[in-house]
Length: 88
Image 1 (cartoon, one colour):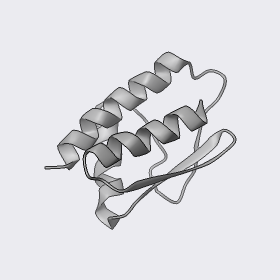
Image 2 (cartoon, rainbow, N blue to C red):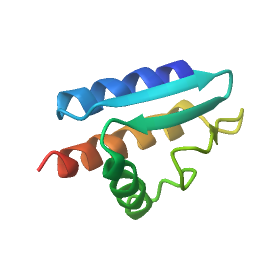
Image 3 (cartoon, rainbow, N blue to C red):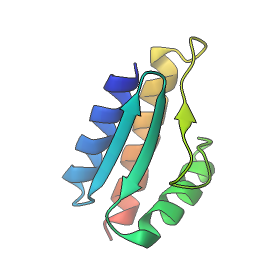
Image 4 (tube, one colour):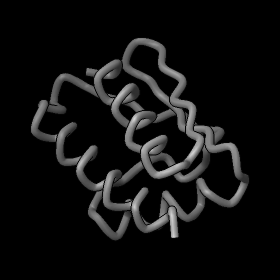
């Protein structure tokens, strides 16, 4: 699931012209935006969508067996909406 999440986050960001690198290792992942201010904006907008991430790009996020594909798809849908807001 981590691979699915990471690849899709990178693709959705790229569609909106946002450079994002998702580093993954087993159940952990971190988000690194090219622009320094983009992480803070992404984090806040994701919170508004009900998606809770680690509050710093220097911290890891974790997936567990409790996260279903539905949870991941909800996260991706929220991220797609957030990326569209960020491209403006």
